[in-house]
Amino acid sequence: MAGTTSSFEKTFTIGGDITINRLGYGAMRITGEGIWGPPKDKDEAIRVLKRAVELGVNFIDTADSYGPNISEQLIAEALHPYPTDLLIGTKGGLLRTGPGEWPVDASPEHLEEALYGSLRRLKVDRIDLYQLHRIDPKVPAEKSFEFLQKAQQEGKIRHIGLSEVSVADIKLAQQYFEVVSVQNMYSVDNRKWEAELEYTNDHNIAFIPWFPLGGGNVQGQEILKRVADKHNATIHQVALSWLLHHSPNVLLIPGTSSVSHLEENMKTADIQLSEDDLAVLDSIGEV
Image 1: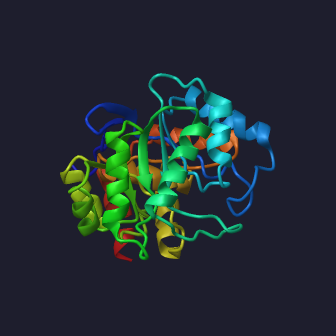
Image 2: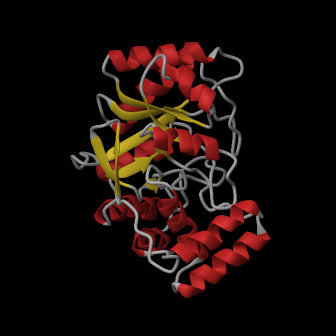
Image 3: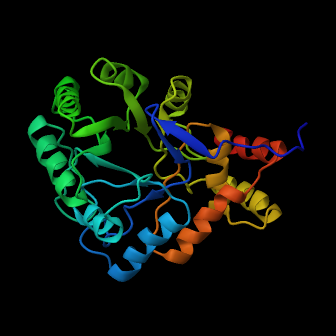
């Protein structure tokens, strides 16, 4: 019935062997302005990471380029030795030349430097989920994939994912290794990568939306507010909840540098949208 509550799976199994809660944490925002340098309040950043785990987060997403290096260092300082069920995913393939600047370099030489740097900063012998941050237009994708394949064979990487890729890119990568995750920009008001979401769901690949709150669609914001008011929730909570309901392979990684905001985000898992709510929210993508 249209008015009934829609349920969703609370967990997802990555690569067939790592089961995690679908509501995770993205550790980009625990760095300085422009994702550059240390945070203004390091103690709060440490508290955020510890509190996230206390609240049931067992998937943390980061990258060597966040800071650069700062996010990974803080994760290790706050949480190492890690809980046995905690999956830390990191990424390589971007350079940092200044605040807000993200040149791409997915050459094997840079990926090797990035991977070994991440291993050292995170204080691990193997990265459980290593994602190619971007395919480099200056480097044949096959070269990047060959490096990741080799690093996996050597035991430095357990599972491999991709970011900002098309279905064709995923299929090419699958000739070199199993793709277990795809991280593309996606939100209730930005469905550009819908085909990729459908492909990953069909193939049991995790889909990790970045910029999951969108926000550029005024009419969409009004619709979100109506649904949020109905549930005594924020529009951000409803936007995140829609993603959990929308497809069972979606993993959320909302980021924040504030414990109070983290706690607010984590309440998203308790929101039960109805079929009517979902139909109304689905219409945002058609605006």
